[in-house]
Length: 75
Image 1 (spheres, rainbow, N blue to C red):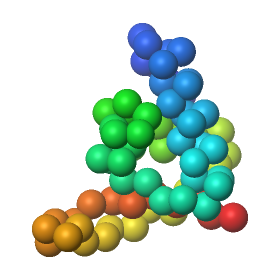
Image 2: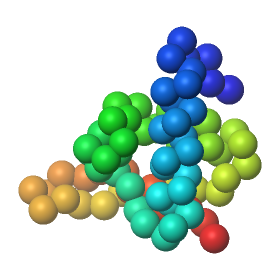
Image 3: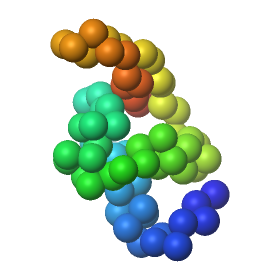
Image 4: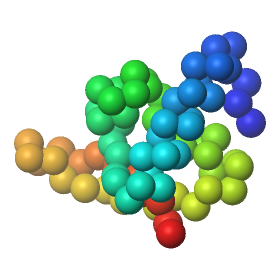
């Protein structure tokens, strides 16, 4: 459950992230920050999972050779 003091902002981010993932797109933390102003993507993913959304997480390599977690909806 979301116990964030800035509940409305995190709810708005959850909605945007949910819609993005359900549209078939993937999302990394850097993309979430750039697109939705979300600095805590893992927390928003946890919120969405707590509400029953099925989300896959996988490690992917960036063009710089670093690994990041990429999230996608399980349809």
